[in-house]
Image 1 (cartoon, chains in turn yellow, orange, red, brown):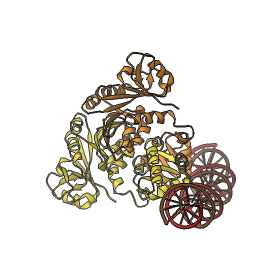
Image 2 (image 1 turned 30 degrees about the vertical axis):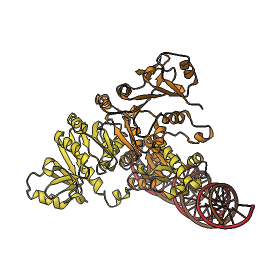
Image 3 (image 1 turned 120 degrees about the vertical axis):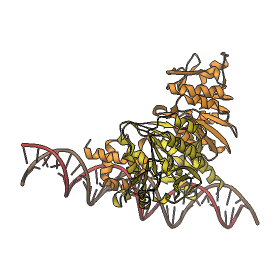
Image 4 (image 1 turned 45 degrees about the horizontal axis):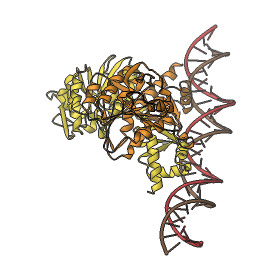
Length: 255
Length: 255
DNA sequence: TGGCGAATGTTATAATTATAACATTTAGTG
DNA sequence: CACTAAATGTTATAATTATAACATTCGCCA
């Protein structure tokens, strides 16, 4: 990449970090070049900055590109169905622990339906979304930021969780093994997840069918630790109804 | 507002909270109406959702509407000049405390120029921006979220700050009184600000000319507590050079 | 200095999005 | 049931944004 181009991209990146978004026209003026040049610059590195509707935005700012049309045409996709089911366990006035990951994001929108809730989270993306809900009190558990899971980690996390009156814990997992071991990708998530499970009155695990029979690096619980498993996996449902020991209630969602 | 319309807006708001953004076409499909109806819906409540370039976004997500053109034409506006000046006090490897408010946002973009930094903050908007900088280690001090200042408050904050090795504290103020008292709007900011001032090796206060001679509800320091005052106010500079007691170094920025 | 190629600017045209005007449907009411 | 008014849909047109083609400038090197 040419020197000039790189300089411009740096300048734009800097501006975007503080401004959030920038009109193509302003970007051109800022760099002292034509709009076409900015367009060409952005074409060379489509990863970091994207251009939508004449505006530059940080690529990472973009939400998941999931197409909401499915919601109506083919029924809600797994993620939405799981969250809708999980919603039925939430009551007015609850204090919810919301785990990191993308599984629970659709739930956050539904929280606008309540008059008063408290949300506790250690995930930055969850915090950002919940901050936009005027009816929800937000408590963020901070620490060192881990970009991979957009969440915070640290020794104080677990202790802080134990100090809160958490009503219901909504936990996500990357894997639910056949031995009932529940695992996730990142080790720093283990402590907060375990603390939330230990503290909460009701523990709800969400895991779609792709997570079943899978083991990830960090074990943090067994299925028996949960009160409810929300899943769309029919097989798991049958197996558990057949009478396996220490099994939670199963809340199945159908396609 | 009609019942149907309100329902649609609720549905869209929910979708936006989890998706972040939504194409007009998808929004129309989702609600089962025409795009024109969605446009009309949005016209009736322009506060909560805005439509740019065919995409719906949460209005609060929008960055400040400041026009970057000024940066070139009329020189950088105060905010940018202050941050550029503050930048000169930052060195490779520093651990920075970044205060809440909008004053320091332009600085965050400049941080991309360093190879390794650590940023400590209790502000959600700062955290969100810094999370996009791959070269910066981010530590967020969590707590109860205060929408008014987009920052967190709580008893543990100050204690946590004292436990960190903060190199330089960049502090913002809403008022710097003639009696040298430095104040801000919100009381929950006092504890973290004071803890950062007490812990940091170097304390840098940023205050543009509009803040001078102003007193806000919450006092948190006096000018003498700082090592550097970054300002664009010429009068203050002169007064302090005339030999007032307990005065920090003055870093003036010129228009 | 002349020429070459990359970078940038300019212009024309296509595609998309915004607005306005008018047509149709829907819900409610006497 | 017919009428009305609001809500919604449809279409045409304007404005904006995207793309492509070609012109110009700039820097470099023989």
